Length: 259
Image (tube, rainbow, N blue to C red; front, side, top):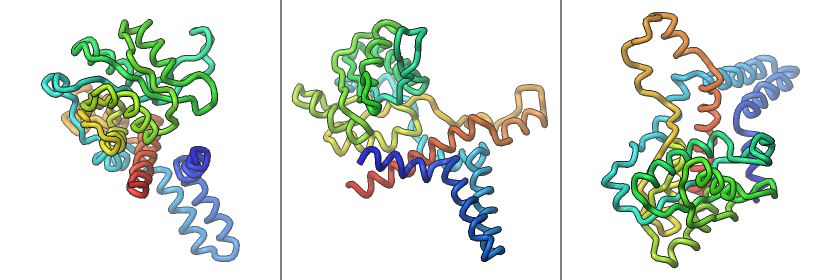
């Protein structure tokens, strides 16, 4: 099932999804030129929209609607749960492997909350590639790079549903039900839904927001129109955010179908 989900998501997510629409239009255009051009044009427009900040921001608006966790909310938690976001298997400068940039953003913020609160930490992430579990690399980085002790390592999960299910098996028998959940802001809506369905009271602790509401404010760079153009033009960072947004909306659809 995990492999099937990965294959389907690859076919739908950019850049492959829009490219398939364009390809279908080119093939169909041999017999139905007007329909083929319309389909190919649609794929091109979709591709551009998914790398343009304004349209990507609309996709993220209902995902990144969680504010940062407050000190008062953090004080109510029993534990901090940090979700994996992937690993870098070839990292010779670290001796073998390590966390990737997405996971690093999460554990950095989780470490900050742990230092501030003194709460015990659980890291959650399995081994989709059959190697060392992501949670193990998270533990190493938290301890060696951030000076944070990890009490629990959940190393069996392959997706967010697994994160919630296997974390519940570790924490809830020990009486830990109210958690500060650390993950990307765009991922929080889906993560919170799965963890609540697993019996947790979730205190969202989002990090690494992909949108910046200040981008629509007054220009303080001194570059005027140039700055505005650079902020509005399609970019690699917007393309990544567009991919992430579509990934999360598909994940929420899967949650609806499974609940």
